[in-house]
Length: 91
Image (cartoon, one colour):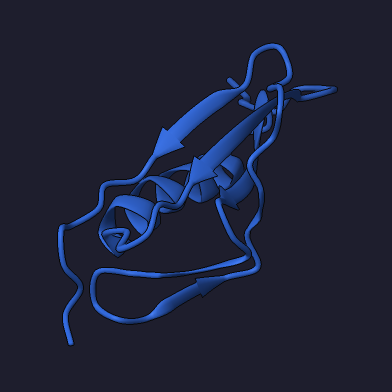
């Protein structure tokens, strides 16, 4: 039995990174999607990291950069990953 498909279904995933984001809330789910893309070809997860600005400070003081702007509309079938945040960042 093969998990390979002729044309994978594309599933966009928008990972919303808020200020003071918990990095595990971002990295953990994205690693699951990365591994899913490696292990099967039926569905291809395409991740779009987005935020209110292009770079956002995390809960531990590291900056998450290269974020796209929040989209006005999501494509059909898109999923949203909303990362957690903390009240104050580690300093």
